[in-house]
Length: 118
Length: 115
Image (cartoon, rainbow over all chains, first blue to last red; front, side):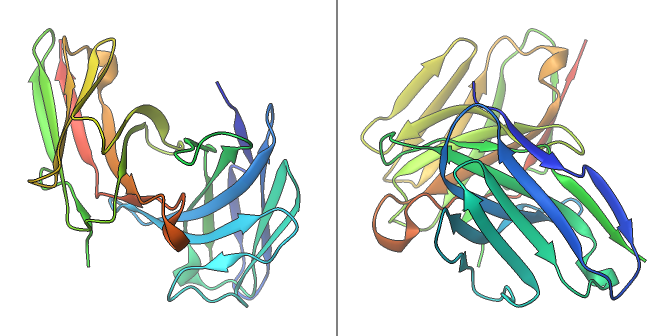
């Protein structure tokens, strides 16, 4: 299988601060990483697509200045929630696809990060 | 606009019986479909997928059926086991253009398998 990790698993911060979440593919190189957000009892909503070495592509309605994404290497992508507010509290999940497979790449998901903004 | 819909929020099944989870989609550009299993506070785990060129894919106790004309797919689990209890998400993607690789998820169905 393919392992994707996220750090931290849980974070509580004060309103106005910034929080960085890391997503790592542990045993494979990821051409593309995706960031999702899940509200309680709701579906996973794609926030952005992150390709190594290039700018992330954000979905409609997602503020790129608020949710900064950096994909510095083939095994690491980071999501920074800037000037966090209570409405940013959510479960953030990343996923990664392997390099070199067919177009129907399977996405492997990280365990998620629970962000609570006080 | 919910392009992938799982209309049953929950399903309860007896151990040993068949579990059938349903999913409908509206976007005719979707051509690859996946099922994921998710436990609370964890990321989804890939279960099984199907390409639009097929109508059935089987992997052990899990079988996915695709009816393209009806834009409907289903996941069959047989026999169901208590360890199958989780939230099941249906997801779809299109392999063309800007939709490449992007997954659109349904709302999820909570499956409970009773011993």
